[in-house]
Every structure is written in structure tokens, then in C-alpha cells.
Amino acid sequence: MSASDLTAVALTASLASITTLLLLLVGTPLAWWLSRTGSALKPALEAVTALPLVLPPTVLGFYLLILLSPSAPLGGLWVRLTGEALTFSFSGLVVASVLYSLPFMVQPLQSAFESVGRAPVEAAASLGAGPLDAFFSVVVPLSGRGFLTAAVLTFAHTIGEFGVVLMVGGNIPGSTRVVSIAIFEHVETLDYAAAHALSAGMVVFSFVVLTVVYTINRRLPVHVG
Amino acid sequence: MSADELSLRVEVRHPGFTLSVSEALPLDGVTALFGPSGSGKSTLLRAIAGFERPASGRIACGESLWFDDQQRVDVPAHRRAVGYMFQDGRLFTHLDVAGNLRYPQRRRRDRQSGWDRDAVVAALDLEPLLERRVASLSGGERQRVALGRTLLSRPRLLLLDEPLAALDRNRKAEILPYLARLQRQFRLPTLFVSHDVDEVAQLADNVLVLAGGRVQTRGTTAAIVERLDLQPITGRFEAGVLVEGVVLDHDARLHLTHVDLAGDRLSMPLIAHVPPGERIRIRIRARDVSLATEVPRAISIRNILPGTLEALVTEPETGFAEALIGLRGTRIRARLTIAAVEDLALAPGAQVFALVKSVSFETGG
Image 1 (tube, rainbow over the protein chains, first blue to last red):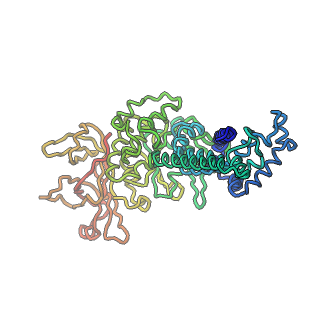
Image 2: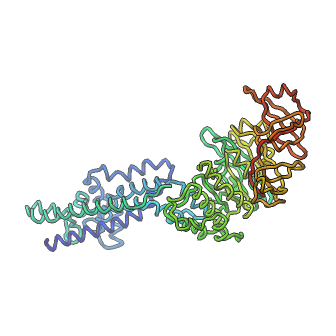
Image 3: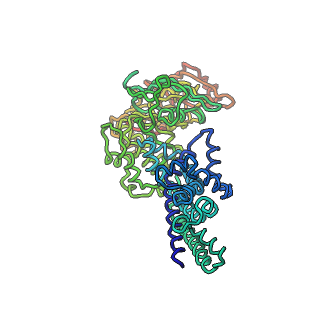
């Protein structure tokens, strides 16, 4: 495998890791709120969360390109703060991935929180635990499978993204040239050997990760009342 | 407002159901919230605990104000000094038994009430369970652990939400003595929700009868259980009375215990673990009491108590009638056929002999 392909692999892994971490921080409170609220806003927010599932990546990429460009308010603010543009940069890819993979984090967590239900939280409250305390001491441990599933799906889905990256990040080695883009480029230039090496690697990696997840999921103790 | 009262003015509205209660309950002993399912007893308990927000009203436990819609006070559940024991225990399945008991200890509200972990573990026989996983516990063991966990949160008021409902008859018999012992040992004011009049009879000192979201009546347990007119609410309750007696002595050879029943002497199956002089609660079912108008001779029944027939109520659409008989210092009930009532010409005021076939020991102390 060429040095530039290895760079692409490393870049992809770090993009997926950062995206997963950020989504754990952002997606957990959102999923918790969605699982508890009786608000009239809930269906609208659920729909927004699920949009990346149904929209073509090009649509998402197009609007992100506009939103993140240095001439737009958000992109301009970022330029003033960091001196760099969000478009065609690694930071811009992270922003795009967080939005693109949002449903893969939020939906498993929301259903895990819903299946934990109110009962253990009430029990914790009756024993003197405040809401945040009850969340970390009871809800999180009881939602172990949900967190595992959400994190793995987010990570894997981020690795697999292509359209949004192409629109927002382009193809800059070491900065935005992720594995899926590298494969596309190898195919375009008819370098099938290099395309095979990366593609087969993706297949094996995905298979191994999913097998591990399913194995752990089966071994985790089932928490029933 | 008094320091030792739970003062309740609660209105909770659910679709098709309104709970409206205004009562002051003593913060002392066990008070049962009794009524058929759907009568609002659990809703009331949840409002007291802070799990359910009343539409309006005021809840104060002694000096602490927990809820007042006019003053915009709504203390969150975790800051109310209540211990809530759920029907299904709600133990944390990701912790073992010891972990469940530790949970409230690390979050203890700053009250210096007297009991510690060792006392609770000993009172509930939890020692052999400490290492066990929650999933491996039986229903009765689970409720014992849940009770222990609740006590270790050092509540000022204990709320029991049908703690026995999920258990079968044998498990109930296993856990009832613990609940009764607990009352004696920890002296914790308790509100106890139940739709089972047997449980109420065994555990409660006072009863608040709820139906359709309103308080129907309240009184001492003995008085409520005795009331014939509450039977539509008490349901298929095996009619009878609860009476208090004092253990006189034990006869190990005949396997009998003699009890003083407010002036009458009663013999019952041996309860050797209760020392003479202790007060006990005895249940006498109406169907176990027959009446005679003169002292019967050559009869196997040992307990023959003279008394006066005070009231007679005919059960609608059955061949039976219920009689209330005044003894020397207490009353018991008898279930008779209408045919017998007519044959013996029984009427209020008649001098009778109550033949008590069997009595059951409920709780000591």
C-alpha cells in the first residue's frame, strides 16, 4: 500500500474517532431529551435528526458547503477565530460528519433510554440521587448496549461516508482525502490493484467490527427488572 | 400545621380521573391507603413522593413544605425525605445486592436518624444475600433487599406501594413478619398502599379508605374492618374481626396458648415465640363463629363465649346473615344461615353464646 493510501487510512480513522467522541457528547443529551419529553417539538426534532438518513449526501453536502464557506456567517466566524476556512479542511469534514452520522448515534441511544424507562430513575430519586447523578449511576450502566451499538454504528458509518466528503472536503491528501475518496480516485485512474487493497481492507475491517459488536452484545448481561 | 402530621391537600387530574384528597395523617405508626384498584391510592402516594405533580394543593411533612402551588413550591423527589418502596422492588440490576444497599448510603440525606447498615442487614436477614446478583433473587428476597435499601436512605416517612402485590401467598407470608418487625424496631411512620384487606389488617394501625379518587372514610383498622357497610369496597374480604389480646400462658402439652381477650379467655394454637404479657392481634373470621342460645354440652369447640347479639344484617341474594356479638370487652362477628336465624328466633338484644371454631394469630406487639 502506498504512503498516500496509508495516510488516507490514518486520516479516516482519526476522523471517525473524533466524530464518534463529539457525537457521544452531543447525541447523549439530545437522545435523553427525546426519550423523556412530551413536548410538541419532539416530532419535528426527531425528523431533523433522521434527515441525514433519507437525504442524498449531495444535498447535505451542498448546503454544508454554503453554510461553511468563509463568506457565510458561520464559516466567516470560524475564519476569524482560527484563521482557517472550514470548507476543504479537516475541521470542516468533522462538522459535516457529525451532522451526517447524527442519527446513528441518537437513535440507538434514544431507544436504549426509552427501554430503561422512568422506573429506575424514580427509584434512584427516592434514594436521594439528583437527576444528573441518577443518569450516570443508573441510566448509563443500564444502557450499555445502546452506547456500544451507537458508538460502533457512528464510527463505521463515518468511515463509509463519501458524497458529503466529496462536496465539503474535496480530495486534499493528508487533510480531506479519506479512504472512500482514495478508492474512487484509484478506480477513476484505473489503478484497480490499489483500489482492491483499500476496498478489501474496508470489507474485512467492517466485518470484524460488526462481528465483535454482535458477540459482545450477546455476552453482555441482559438487564431485566 | 403540626410537627408530627403529614398534611395533604392534593388534586391530581388524569384523563377521566380526578384524585381529590384533603387529610392530615399522623406521622406515627402505619396508615393504610386502602381501596379497589383505580381508586387513586398509588397516585396519592406518588404525589407525596414527588413523582407526580398535583394540579393544585399543598403537601407538608411536619415542618417541611414539599409542595404548594400558590407559593410555587415543588421540592424535587430526591430532596424529599421519603423512602419509597415499589411494588416490583425496582432493584438496580447492574449492581449486586451489596451495591444496591450502598447506593442510598452514598447519597444519604443529612439526617442523623439512628439505624445503620448492620442493623438493617440484621433486621432483614440480608447477610446471606449480599454477594448475590439481583437477577438470582426470589420475589420475596428482592422485596427484602428493596426494603433494606429504602431504609438506608434514612427516610422520615416510609411509603410502601403494594409491596406484597407481586408475591404469591407463600412469599407474602415470608415477608410480612419482616414488615411487622420493622415497624417495632425502627418506628418509622409508614403509608402503605393496599387493595388487600388481609394485609391491611395485619400491618396497619389506621386506614384511609379511598374510592373513585376520594376519601370514603377513615378510622382505626379494627373499626374499619368491622364495618359491614364497607363491604362493597373491601370486596371479597373474608369477613371477620381483628381483636387485641394479651398472652396469658402457653400449654406445650396440648399445644395451646391462652389469651385474655378484654375479659374473655380464649385458647388458640400455640404461639410459643410470644412471651406471656405481650399484646397480640388476633383475627376471628365470621365463618368460624357459630351461635347458640344455650351452653352446648359435649361439643368439641373449646371457645364458648357468652355475649349479646348487637346487630344482624342479611346478605342480599344469599342464604346468609352476619351477626355482631358484643362480648365482655370486645366484639366479634358470626356468619349464620338465615334458616338458623329464624329457627333460633335471633334478634338484636338476644343473649347468645359464640362458639369460636378457630382463630388466627396475626401479629405480635
